[in-house]
Length: 485
Image 1 (cartoon, rainbow, N blue to C red):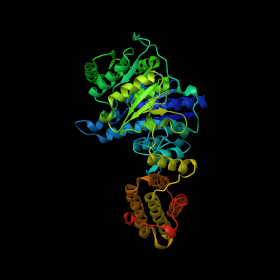
Image 2 (cartoon, rainbow, N blue to C red; image 1 turned 135 degrees about the vertical axis):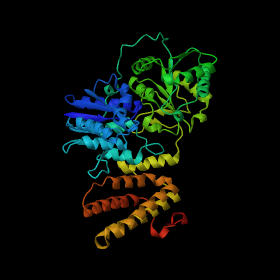
Image 3 (cartoon, rainbow, N blue to C red; image 1 turned 30 degrees about the horizontal axis):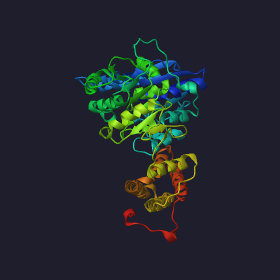
């Protein structure tokens, strides 16, 4: 069997793909496993032994004719066609797209043959997005920043494959590394991130480290980061008046980061590649997380890891983080932190937000067959009632298509979708239902008018059955004017 995995996202996403790639090779030891990544991030594949062939997507080379002084669209198209033809000629048995992007879905479709099994985003024959598997449909509907999803990306990846992890899937590579001449105990601090909004400014980092040293002068801090972050490291050093800070920013390769993490007592940092590398070395982590990311999906997976969650970097209280670092080293569980745990959701909140928990329980009921959560939220019940009315009306319109024609009914059906979107903006707690419905409609494959109408009606009827759990009886309905069209 020849398998191709696409992971066209950044360094951290590639490292999160490692356990799934190891699981594929473990479950299919005789397969020929290929991995496609962007050339810019190919360094994140170094040391990954499960893959038989690494393929780089040379975006800069493919698009270079488009930025010449004399534009040449034909040259760029020719380069892209040659790249696609070469991949298609591999005649893959299974293509797995772990990248949630439109471009990856087009590429997946272009290199697939009729006999190819496809998992992840691809395209229908008419060019519209195709989501062939249930886990990818879940990801499209419920995952992302600002959603109620609590399933980690690494767990979604393995679910897409229909496999389960074993401990060896999380093994980190070993390299012949230079001697850093470090003490036996130290903490690694990764001060950077792919975007400024995902990490702390230098003065904030300096305060965090200074507050840690107020409690612990014996354990040095080893700072790591990219070469273009050296000035940030110097600013942090200047702001720390006591304790020992070892500045390795811009001085380590990714394989050497693995070595540093293996010997570290803890990694502190924001959402970044080293945080995901630490999951492979099983290094305890303190993840500083902000609203710009969803820690449920991308937080640390190593044992004894924690998440410090605030809205924005400026909201970080340096004294809290410094003390939390010290307590973690002492084997304590700081009460203010979100703790790494087992199960479907990888973390345990110290204080649960009832609204967020309710939406997560809705999602589990929708996708896992669990009991729908009980609520006394009248606004939610009224919104569900209105959603049910809109859905019933849409069913009626679809059933009238054979008699009145699609041209007459389509605007009415689309109007119903517009009202649903407006309703979501007023009552966000119904988002899981609406996103499920929108995704299931999107998954309808091309066909005759009758076939598409029938499949669309099936989606609406299923939504009708789902909503029936919360629909209020006519005798006690109390519509609020907020929900009137």
